[in-house]
Length: 427
Image (cartoon, rainbow, N blue to C red; front, side, top):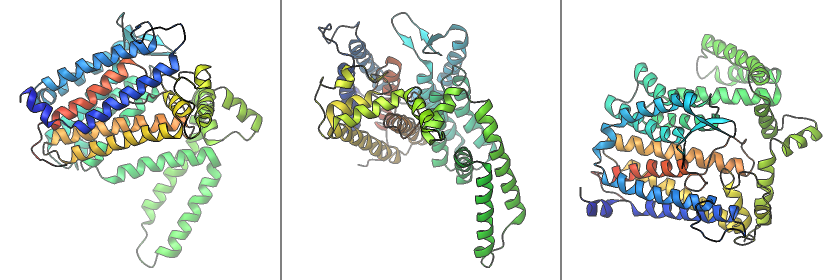
């Protein structure tokens, strides 16, 4: 396909939203890092200057991605996955430690974070495997292999330690559900999460009482309409209680103190208001200041470069994980709503693009892109406004960082390149 044909067939709505998010993100990075000593936006010693350089590299990456034959991505997906796994292993020997995490390779002019490339490689490898087996993934062996593709990079990333990045990979499980994995597995996962949270908040005793009441109600109102499977119900109840009993041990002996503090802050586990406030001002300091910055912006915001909390460096890591707080303070509700609207339109558009693919590989990869971007968006915004614990996940196309911006760009534009080769025309 010629370059002109690609430009005609590429989805320009997605491209325009991408550039809008990158531009707005850079404007807020500029605002959150600007000082009077800086004189030029092209000063590459500044953070906003470096981000401008990363934007330029991303543009080059787009040109390369669109120029490659569409079959290239499917043909070499497995090789890229293997190379990426080796690069993750290499971090344990050659990695550079930043902020307590050995997640980067020091290339001199640039710190490369292979976990970002791993997201692209894993989405491609998963799409390759699921499209190759040509089944609705009912066989246990197929389910196991697909899940292993997701779990392997997560296992390699957790010890860096970078649990936030590892969590992103589990979002790809929803791609497997889209391709036919029984919802039974999802219900099990959600159930264990709920048991974990309920046990932390109320304790095992109240969980057992609630379970007993549920069983009594089940026997009281449903026994006449269908036969209740007593043995499976008993097994499920025993597993539930045993898992609940293990929660406190894991929480107190496996989790580090900073992890316990974040859960205590998020779930309000600490009954002593003084201790809770102390946790809020230490481990939850970033979120606390972020909330205050957003609140101070009001409806219209304080104006560009006029954010007092932003200028006063009240919010740590504001140009990276907490960049959304700059939008809230300087652009107010209007600005934050506009950013959320742009992301929402992008997600809806990508879903539309994925659904119109006749090629299985392109469709599955498209849903992988959606899952990765969506979990980053959801967790980052939730973290910044205080409804989710802080786990250090950047906002796609928005937060400062070369690896993040470049590989989010690669992730998106590979799918847009695959879409140019679609066989089915649709809105």
